[in-house]
Image (cartoon, rainbow over all chains, first blue to last red; front, side):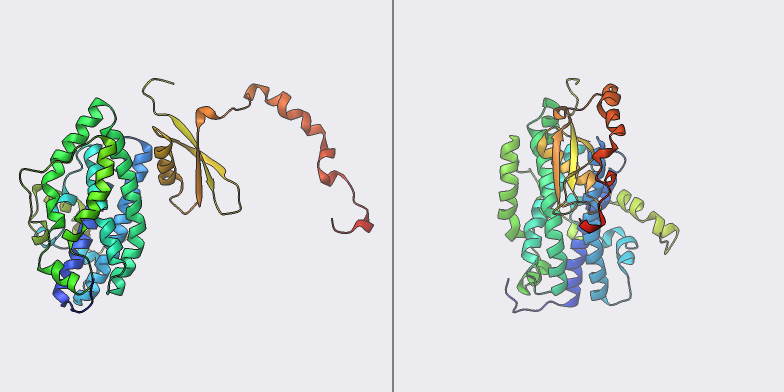
Length: 257
Length: 95
């Protein structure tokens, strides 16, 4: 990443909100398993990962609020925006489905974020670099945890294998979106703040490839790719997710605990 | 063990370098890799440790609770096995 160009405030804000929204929404999805996991060990493991993600989201929202400079707080950004203002990718808002689908979604996102954070650790933006340095360790464990499950479910019983294959098919249309470049990522990359999403695909494939090979699973190319999350165009599931996520702050504004 | 039951593993955590691994509980997991992950997720959430051991519970050989009396009660009367039983002459000073 060169450091020649600079980035304007709105572009940096958009970049930060995309990242923060990805982490908040996926963290929320994982937290939905709390109390419902197939075994006690996973009932702790998934909220553990959720808390990593929400911690990362908090740091990003705090910085985003600072960059925006309009007096909004991390809570305002997390809880009080409208659906069309959320810029997360569609992958993270996909419903949990079964455990196989949740683990595969986790693996995909972590395999995308690990090379992202590794590159961002040397960001020209000191705050982003700081967040990345912490996140890179957390995401490495997410890959391990989800990856081991994908291997065992893919190479497990007839039923677990069928469920993994269903998950691959279900999530396939949502993968391309996370690797998409646009003027925001181009500017961020030129300014040395964050890598271009498309540049992370080889690293993603190097992570997923051996896991799928060990699991005996085949990667499929979807007949079409769904996009829109980065522009605030979300799927039906997103509204329900936000209702759940926001209702306390909207019912009791400023509630704390 | 029932055919489809997930095996049980005993978890030992070393709280700091220099201290011994200490038993802290158990987890269910299909194999040793998953057992280590489960142990990490269940027992090290508050910074409890720097190292984890997992051991198949089935590999642990335990003393029989029914033999508790014959095993352990005879030592109760042998207080001379404690160093504090002996008076150290003043001339010895600190030992």
